[in-house]
Image: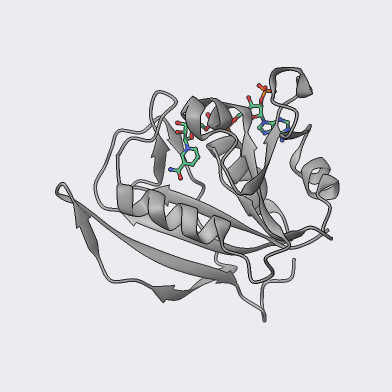
Length: 180
Ligand SMILES: NC(=O)c1ccc[n+]([C@@H]2O[C@H](COP(=O)([O-])OP(=O)(O)OC[C@H]3O[C@@H](n4cnc5c(N)ncnc54)[C@H](OP(=O)(O)O)[C@@H]3O)[C@@H](O)[C@H]2O)c1
């Protein structure tokens, strides 16, 4: 099993979604997501994305599976409703064990709330890529509080799109206190 990262955008109240969708439309954040999750240093490898079934269903049809990356969906229902190239697992542990690490460079958990909650508790979660979106979007699903085991290691400048302010912060599991 390999360490993995979480990538998420949340608002001032840790809200991540509303009515099954992202509450905001931020092209700069989508570009950031694509760049972080697609980039590999070894071109013969790909990154893997782990997501919940509802997040899979929230993706526009023309973008799923998310191209250039291995898509793995968590569901209790099995693989019947998914394209053949999509991996399916029955839980996070099952997903992490299923990934063939010879062909995968990085593993990202990309949501939603149910999967983030499990991932944040997992000892192999080593990095968080967080887009902090200013404001309260009256969300109905939330990211858990960031554990004190994670410390911010870098932050971008602030960006603005259509009056929405946001910035990117990376958090890493603290090497001194982080082993649980
Ligand atoms: N802001 C962001 O960065 C971000 C990122 C991703 C998603 N979102 C938003 O988050 C919302 C969706 O989140 P959500 O919490 O409602 O749903 P979700 O976590 O995407 O999916 C939940 C489903 O995934 C499966 N699942 C989750 N954990 C599992 C486990 N441990 N074992 C087996 N199956 C598991 C189950 O599918 P079955 O019912 O099929 O068994 C469950 O019903 C949407 O609004 C979406 O837009 C936001």
